[in-house]
Image 1 (cartoon, helix red, strand yellow):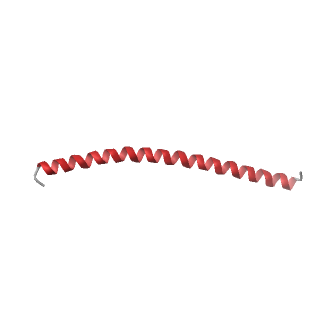
Image 2 (cartoon, one colour):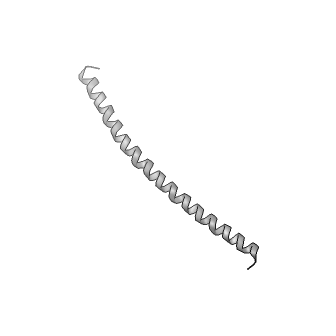
Image 3 (cartoon, one colour):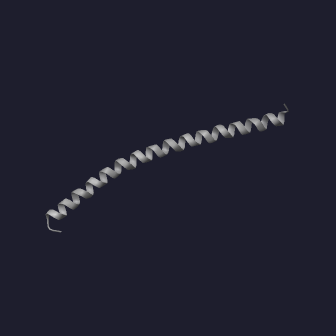
Length: 60
């Protein structure tokens, strides 16, 4: 195998590994965002429910 082919093969393999690493990182980031937003959404929902209850109890 020539030096040029060796370099091309290395670049291809390195790019494939890099793409896989980015895909894994993206998956982890999305998982963290989904869990965080779900948690925040539950808190905000409870907050709005309390506000609605308080307003209704005062005749608004």
